[in-house]
Length: 377
Image 1 (tube, rainbow, N blue to C red):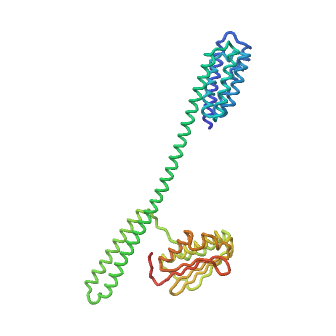
Image 2: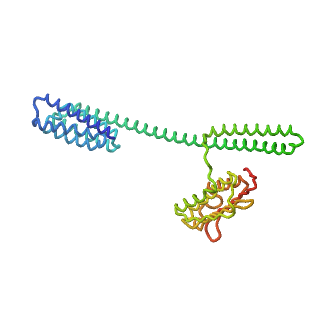
Image 3: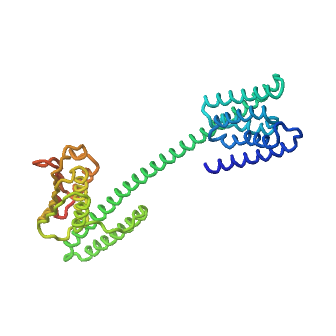
């Protein structure tokens, strides 16, 4: 905005200089030199507001031209045309419909009055200025329409780019899902082959060492192929190795929840022992999502987190006494968080139950078997 204003003032200063130069060439001045200088400045200065306030600037020009024609020779100068045409263009480009018509009416009245003051009225003296100002007003309106059209096209292009970006992100997500399924197939197939061959090699090791050796070689080859395939898929995903969270991080998770305003108590039963990495990660995420759910809906109600290490199962229980048990995002498995928890538990053959808690509140219960078997969805 500053640059157009500077340009407007620069053009105004240039027009003022031209007007003063033209004034210096007039021999017989009405009203004296000082009053004519003021008259030229009054006629030229409205050009500085042709963009910001075109109707007010047109009114100022009308008053300056009428007074100049009455008292000075300023209205006889050609520089008045610069202001006249600039303001006519400004009316078309920057005034609304009624403002533009009102401004043209003011310019027409000013032309008629100044002509009547300076000389006898005739059709050509009045019609020519009206046609010129009308043409410049139409030109300004055309420029305004094109500018708006360009803005609309730019906005449409931005929206189209946003839609393409969203579509690209969706495509990337779908491709990652496809690659994840492919990784599952690679690992499941390779591990199945390796487990079968390892079992067969153990059974025939004593009576047929050569076949056992061949089975061991097949296990090694299958493992190498699986590693190569996983490296390729991970390279496509551009993944960086990162340590997955485990149940050892529950203390920090609970502390962060307390800092967020949720009174959480953590209870651990049984002997803490190393679990499969996938089970550790899934259990941590279940507790994390349940605590997040409580933070959202439990209204800072007391919440208990109970972790039990059994001989065959890992049991998780997160319950609160909040009033939000009836919230749509907490019942019936609705919401992406609860669905995600159920999927994580089901991968390892476990079960997840969510719903109202006896006595009020909401609870999440999960059981994950620790016998080494996984039921894949």
